[in-house]
Amino acid sequence: MMQPVLPGDVAAVARALLAAGDAERLRLCRRIFGGAAEAAAHTALFCRLHPRWGDGSLSAAARRFDLADEVCLEDPEYLRCTRLVLRELAAHLETGGEAPAR
Image (tube, rainbow, N blue to C red; front, side, top):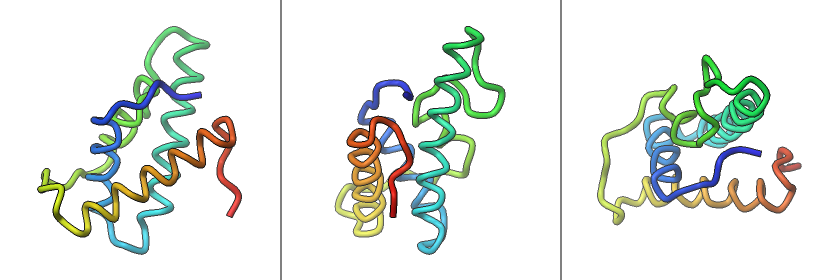
């Protein structure tokens, strides 16, 4: 399981998705979640940061990718990205950290 998710984690992932093309967003979001989970397991086993994914937080995993500049919450594309992150987070929590089946 990855680190606890804070509002800044959701924002960082949403900014990474915003910087990506619409067709790539779901795949990228799941990659970020997977990287955070991998890093959390690595950190628990070896007591050090994962060399690629960081400390197990979504923010650290998202920052491996380009992040769009911060935008206002009223931005429709940013809201769409944020909804995607929250939907994937809910699926992640419902399955106990397993990849959502779709």
